[in-house]
Image 1 (tube, rainbow, N blue to C red):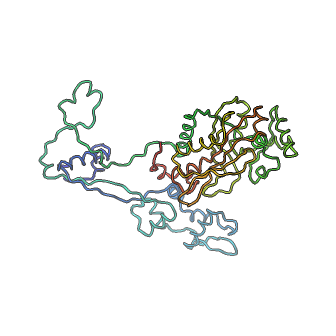
Image 2: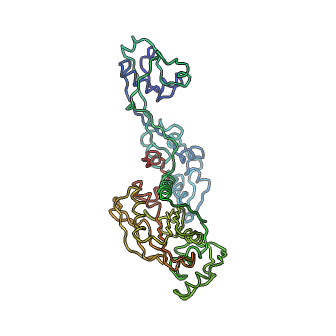
Image 3: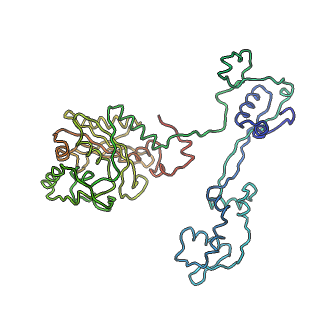
Length: 447
């Protein structure tokens, strides 16, 4: 083809010969190494419509659509209506009279942005800036190659070269005597974005693998739990602040308590002075996966090791390290031969497997563990320690009513999203849920 046209783009050749552009680029690169063609990389900028831009192209400008709704009271405008109205006022298609937005023009003219949405490549610089500011178009880059045949290439004889050996060629031996197309591992080719797991799914599987390799069994529980399993079974007083509405999401209905609830009632009345069945029967969205540990303990015979990775819900103020719905990594070790040093050993092993080196474990307090500790990891972007969860040994008041044993139970509950934030080098835990397609495509895969 090049002997006829002398010069062409890889995309043009690919279209004419019904090949993939990257295949043409690879062949051209190989030919350029032999001096048959000259190759020049071309980077072209172009604009494509966003989802919102496509909607505007289909339905029309928001400032034109809002005109049919006028008059409207200024105080009653929604956020979207405010934006549309501001543009209508700017274009002098509407005005404010007596606290109301009223129409000024009967039939608004066609504006540059409408024309540009049909073909952004022909839009002027000023119009494109408006479209970008309104998030209707986004700038993209396209890589192409200009291929020009050389004098050597003009004189070269066309000779078939094999690019791929097939099973049939191996069976028949037809590959013998053939010429193979050379290639270089350093050749640049267009990027490909294969399917992959979401970062959270990826780290959940890694966490599961760590515990399974340590001989733990996995347990799961329900999102809607009773206050009995979420609080009472864990020796949390019924007047504890954590049980109030500002910390816990309660739901309608009540739960049936297990037959041995009187064991728990007895302990609460002895140490806290009061306990009611009504309070314990309330339903809620579980605030920690320790509720799963409490349930599973009633079915275990020591020695046993159990872990859980699942969602929990808390009425939190959302910020860079807090979410109202998040995952927790829960673990318990039930055996008469374990102590605090074993707990720290498990935690240090877990975090070392995830690549965390700067860890500290400090004393703390939880109603259901004694002694208790909190685990922190150094967060370089914020120059501060980030708390990743709590740990300790379940109190006798928790273990005996549920199991009948007076054995230690090592326990920990860690925030998975915070671990993921540090693991992937993010500065804000909310980035895990933003679905930033560029980050999801280009982020490093950890194994």
